[in-house]
Image (cartoon, rainbow, N blue to C red; front, side, top):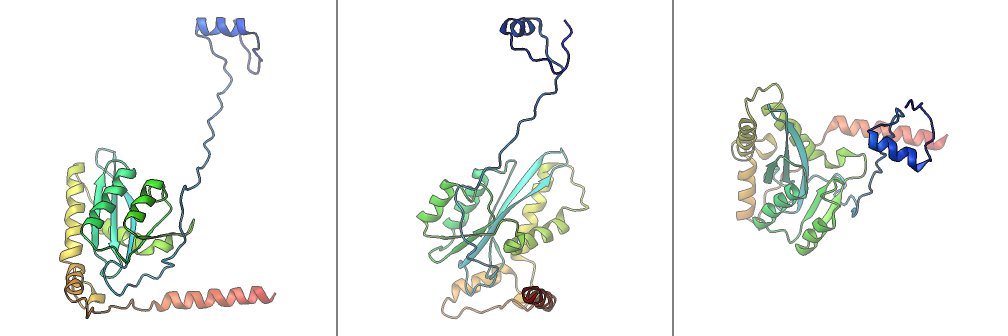
Length: 248
């Protein structure tokens, strides 16, 4: 039987015979069209790029990044940073970027810290917009904040941390196994928290700054974010352009 492209087979008997004989039309199969599912639960951008905190556990930011292993598989790193001392207060590495990865990271952070006055900021990933995660925040009386769609700079602090981490332990590195890569990431986060001094903190490490603040709650040292003159000039120029177009 020679079935030409475009023939319309409405006869059920013909279709039945084709199935029995294992025959198929040469017509190209239609691709499935996937609809983009809207986020279940979203939140306002309460953080609003105010990346400065006056004490630990006021503002946390979180995200998930991925690595490719020597075996060709992917590893996903979920982490939470505190904006006061820039320390990584919790992180998890798993083979799947799923709810469990994000939820376990969150649970680890909450267990070890006082979250009674906390803003928790993330992007609009499906884990953070799920009802289950919303319940976790509600149970701990945590205020949720989310980046605007398409504005990764709204979560710029942790994006910057990913860049530092990957440039120092991932890019241009040759690991022989996933275990070696995981060990390198573990080692680096420990180094970043406990051994790497930061100029902004007067050459103290994030954990030194954090412990000092937690032990001296009545006299917490402030470390204001230095002004970025390049960024200031950029926004001045941008605002001028906006005013000109508004006049026109």
